[in-house]
Length: 181
Length: 440
Image (cartoon, rainbow over all chains, first blue to last red; front, top):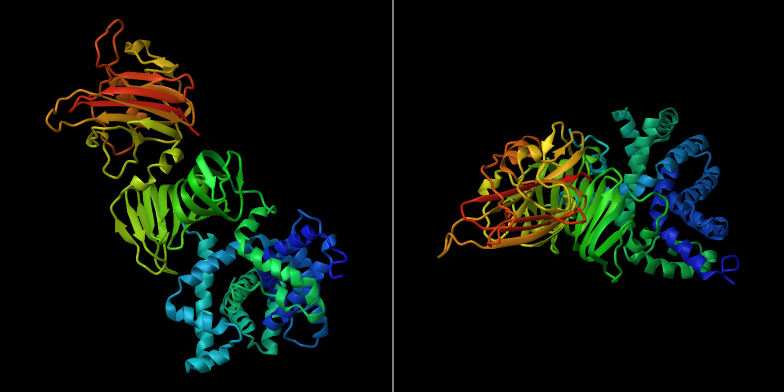
């Protein structure tokens, strides 16, 4: 039986609905801890399975996102303990600090996402093309630069600049900057 | 402090081009600097959101459908449900219980959802898209912002300081505590700078912004300079990448929602609520068909004693100045001016006929003023600045025992919120009544 521990259909639906709503936040959270997209995807997959397996321990009505972050953090630490010698990964200490700080801000993620959506839609076409080119499924900055016929270095610079602009736009929309001045 | 060095390390880390040394330097910096960690998190959120946005096919639900094979069976049903639930994401998010709702419904007027269920007073409006199929509802935010929405409308309340209007008409009254309140549409962002204003979004995304009072900032291009729109001005934009154009100040489309924001529950008969434009002077505003209602000062404390003509339920009768009841100082009040200003026209320019109407306020009426002398005195307190108020104005109630037709009638109803008015049109002459209502 596939659903030995959670054979209650409504419980299953509850999990799926909570998961769908929080998946993007969990992905962002994990990205902050493990840096590389491929690692993050791996961690999120493992975490999603663990969440489902342990869902009977989750108390309905409490903060699912906080619970999901805990599980994701543990999965990230599991993965990183295998790659300890890689100096590109963060230390356990920093991961714990980042996770704490990210948990505190968990509620802001949705607003950020919406702000980003607006800001991306309002990018001029050439800048939109750069972000889309670099972030499209299966695309890398290198492959995009080859396709665009410019140096990767140039694309890096442009991409950094567009990200700066988007960040500024997001802050502005979130009202973190003094819009009234 | 976000310096170039930190930014450079973060960029390289996100682009996956950092050397081991640079990764180490970033690690050390983040360990010792919580502001740097905050900035790093923002950058990562942006990065991962872009990754998801451009790499995920919207029809798919990521991650759940790429679980390792041995677990695939467990989740296969989940994926199917997730896919269908994802389409209902807006409805799902209504279930969010993590945070207190930033707004609740305080008034409804035949307000129904798309599925036919009614909105009710007291309902909390949380995250998720709301579909107001028809009718009007007023939302009061925790910070005091008041927003009235007219259906058909699609909107979201995303926080105490922000709402999204996908379609429909809203009018907003923003107190000082909520300055910076934002209304987003697909075409523009409207940031309040202490004011009241209306926003409408058509089916085609055409967005109109009309400022009744104070000023707002309208933006619709990333980084483009925001456009400041002031009282009595209106702008229009047809899309996020289109220009913001000035248009004539025209409040017709906000006429249903705006009174509710302004504390008027209902007007019936020949009563019409307008919002004063920049060149508004009551005497200039002529209308042969309607008694016009102008909002005046809002939420205002009078420091001066004031005579009143009518305070208790019943009919207005002329009284001597010294016998009029006195309004004590220190009460928080909102003022409205009601006016009938007919002009001579047609074959019978001096016709006399009556114009009738009723107005119901959301708060109790404290007093009604119609005597010209008291009107002038009260103008100094409740009149709008820079507005010229005409004189003389005259309401002529029926003297006791007089049976002839053709007098003015002013009745304060027993609910203390409704005023029943019948005025005799007399082209070239002006009738005005000031109504003081408890502030909300």
